Image (cartoon, rainbow, N blue to C red; front, side):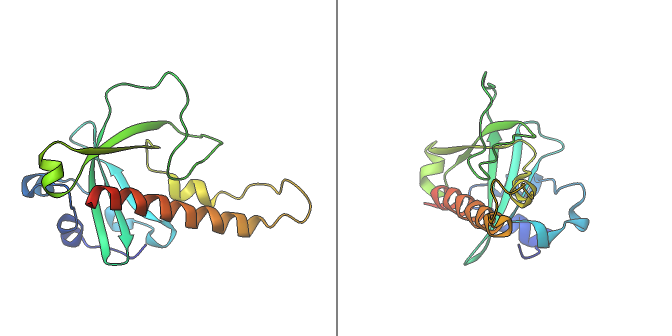
Length: 161
């Protein structure tokens, strides 16, 4: 992912009001963000419980989405819709985002299951052991990275529509 400044970050949100963008709290370690190893930037707001943000790099630049965590927890262990990690080292929660524009003002939302701490970029880069001789571990990891980027971009596009 290409680096973004705090100013660019606040300006790129498509489903947040001006007030919500001004109240946005950047990640605690924003200046030390490892941009090269991220497929998207995601974080939970430190001050507002249940609020989270995602910034994805699309063809037309960074696009930000404001998310709200669902109150209810699943009784079953869920799989992240973005990284599809089957090892589940972390919790997966349901986040909803209001759609951009008139649809969002009318209350239309889009939801997804995502790793609670937005660890998807690290999850897809995990080096799994080869399941059989001759298995290309590096190609499988590259495929997981591409799939993560596609899943995040598809979610962002559903919010922007």
